[in-house]
Image 1 (cartoon, one colour):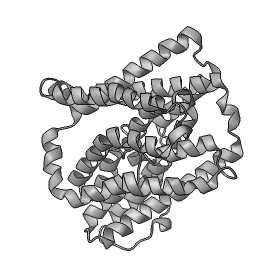
Image 2: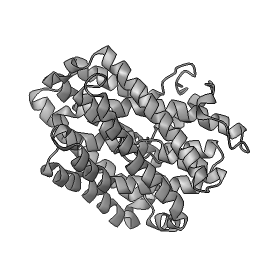
Image 3: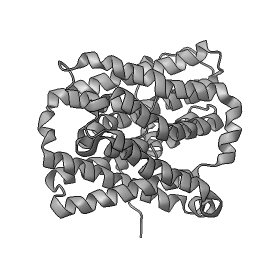
Length: 349
């Protein structure tokens, strides 16, 4: 039987389309009553399983070997957990005339989320950058995010974090950190299985995230919080996120040059230090924000799609200009072929 392929002319990656379809289903058929309880329990179990798989996949030896390039990793971590949050805090001035308090909380949360792994690798490889450094940088960011994202959320979001409280920290530990540590501890026995069935487990990853999205947006529909968002507010949010992404792409590229990194390392720093992980952010948001998670994850979902499209264009251009150190981010023209890299990168972003 011939396998169906996603049409090349479609501007949205199939997984992003699945996410949007899940949001639509939650809007039309939200889980209520007992169904909501079942969906919530299944979502919690799926989140724990996701982080168990993350732990089982991460090679401790590779992570330790990557520490040799510590300056690059410190730069990426600083971009992800220092510069991004500072820009997020600067966005406070946009409330309430441009962003609502709820949308701003989601916007600030996206700046606290760790970087991606697979998309960083895919774009770094396409742009002929330092791929091993991108692998380690993405892994370190994801690992650090399990601890740093909740701590930063506690410090910066406070009461605006919906259901965020001291109990949320306990839930993070139980549902995210403990499964991750268990995956690391059992990697000796399950690591081979996870590697051999990487493709099948990738579908499990994406299915679990879709379940998390459905549960979060169902709760939002039942609570009626979507009435708070107007088309104007969504356009404003997209504009703010475009400015944020452009700023981070420029800061990571030119900042890395000022720090003395070579071209290959600058490529890895830019792609690992300018993006945010939907796969890590969604589960954390459901724990931190509770019933308000649907609005909290909206900025992250929009930013995720935007970063894939823009970084795919940049990576394609840079693959042709491997010796050009000076071209500006804003000077890139969209290429139709860039969607291929974006599609590859979405699978684990």
